[in-house]
Image (tube, rainbow, N blue to C red; front, side, top):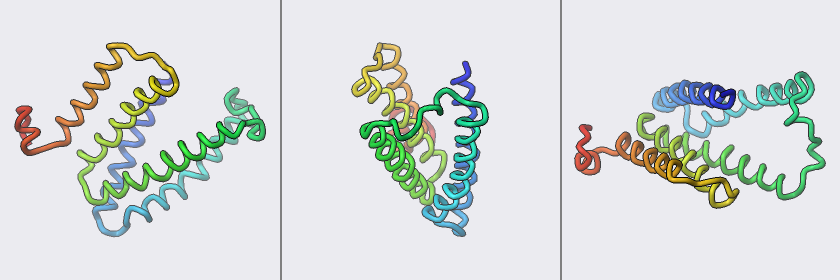
Length: 162
């Protein structure tokens, strides 16, 4: 239940943050790269404080392993996968999309493809379980995004008013 509550909090924070970012980006006063630079500059010190509190203050078990003991594969996955792909490239693409599109279309596409990708890669790469219920859920997520974000002939064919 703790994981679910934390995920809900993250989703609510992202929702508020991206609405604010979209409003600023469409005001013409900031571009996507300056917005990302400001977001990251504000976030980074707060993340370091949270890390220090978790590692030293509350002695979180997940933060006790010394970084020097990590192997090269772990470093590569963290730096390339999390840092470059999720931390930089995803934000660049997302903010660029927000700067030219509607949040009601951009956000569902980006934030629905993330769990779909994670479920499929978790199954194919990490060996996590895949069952009919998960497969149906992935299909429903994709169908929901299609219905929510696409207008015109695709929406009309599905009986959706745009």
